[in-house]
Length: 223
Length: 223
DNA sequence: GTCTATACAAAGATAGAC
DNA sequence: GTCTATCTTTGTATAGAC
Image (cartoon, rainbow over all chains, first blue to last red; front, side, top):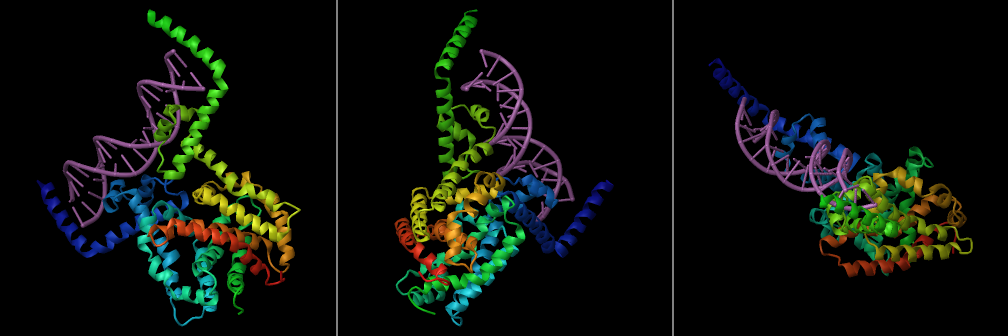
């Protein structure tokens, strides 16, 4: 009998607690899961990550993850979504800034990109995996057509090299900035190139990339 | 009783068959599995591929696969190993040919690489996954130190741009050639860029890449 | 609305007969 | 070497407490 009363008390308490901390608690639980998930996914890859591990390390019940996120794949996509956002969308303002010259844009892109990826080295490869894993979702998220294909940057590339194809130059420059990070494991794995050495090279590249790109564009027009 | 006799007969028959076709059978079975596995893995990815599907399509028993290859992961690695070989080792003779000039090497690399990847579009992304998944295995396989870092190509890059870092140029050129294929799903997913359009762009790139690279190197020395 | 315990199904790995 | 049967792991779904 006392049990029932306790139960009612408890329920009242829970309600109060819920009302007060509802969003905060839910937030922290979900965020905790997402945080652990990101770490696990980026360390072990999709198939190398076990939902039970995520649940355990996040200190939540396994089924709770399936309550909040519908499936492992869904959780993965959600987490990677933010990485994609980081890797691509953050440059869009730079691309469309009408105030800066092409030369300034090249420098800005180099600085922003390489700094970002030095901070988060796993970003490129995992975004690539996600692109490969779910191209449609990726395409629907980033407005490649309008925000990039129609960017001020592209117009400026066309101006700089009217006989060339601006999209080619766009891809080339992204390759110059991003590709070394794809090759990083190849170079560092055998101990030939150390981590510090690699980072130093990337900082050097950060300075050289705009110069190289201008050389490519400069085939037609001198700077 | 008759069962036992049949069984003995059967065993004798199996032995004869085994003696006659042993190696040929084993070979063809293993190769068949690897062939199907490659197709499945490159189409559906690692986690999207089921061992039961591979076994079924190869016409072999599921457990037999685990007898020949120790695990799904092991099979994947074995298959991808050959792709890695294709993607990296095949350029090593070109890099170390003492007869060709740097300019010729740039053209050869562009032709060979882009042709190869047009034939096998999934190669770069899957090799990249494998690199990321198992860097040590990759590193032990390809002699990055001697065959690439010590290649004639690198010496020639240093000659062309003495003030620059030849390894940087090596990476840059690989990026120019390979990176577009990483971005392919991004560009084709939303229908903005068609497959034929992409291929046309890659053929254009095949011609332009050496020119661009010479522009980069030409900052110091005119051609 | 949030969480726990539990059941279930799919898929990878293994033991042992032949 | 090959196959059958079985075990284990792991992702997913459900019932029900609070």
